[in-house]
Picture 1 (cartoon, rainbow, N blue to C red):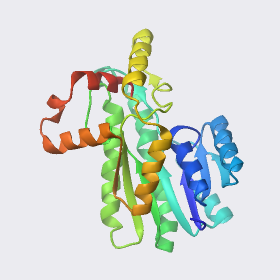
Picture 2 (picture 1 turned 120 degrees about the horizontal axis):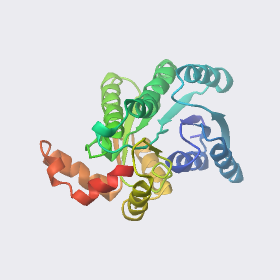
Picture 3 (picture 1 turned 90 degrees about the vertical axis):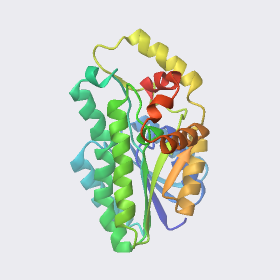
Length: 275
């Protein structure tokens, strides 16, 4: 991977940070981005401690102009010969049912979780097409395969990421650019604990739900997720499922496409309130 640049969004914590560290350990050059500058410094320090190559850049994937400027900078400064673009940045929302969810919060989440992926891909795909190689890795979720209660915005975004990825897989079929959609199950990251809480939600109830969710549903580590993603990239897999829970729910959705939502245990969808 010595000639490969990994461009990773959301690399200041969780899966993004773990994947950045793993990629660097394999000899890749890592360009790590996030709005979390403290987290980015931590990522850089961990990579440098293992003598890896890394540069960090603050980037808000909700800012369309910032992404355009970032892509131009990467091309001019690094002139990457092979790009692995990992669209990982994402946020969560505690908002109750769709009827209870303010449109402002719904649009805020889509602007990051869906349009951030689209914007980054739009900015970097021309470079990849010119080189006729590379990988686009879009982090969706198991909630991009099944829809669950209390997550109308999150599921809309993650289903959108899956659909967008599937179109790219089709359109780039005759190129050497591989496209992967990633569908993690429960991963022990900060996304749940840092979720935005919509006005009208009970903070004490949200905290209680979060504690239960972290105890019962977050069963895999970011490091495990990074290993699975890396193996998927190396094998050119078009779809990467992470965790037994993701695999079971994927089978359920494919077996009962018309009524899987009736088969999912109620307790599981309660946990999804804060995923």
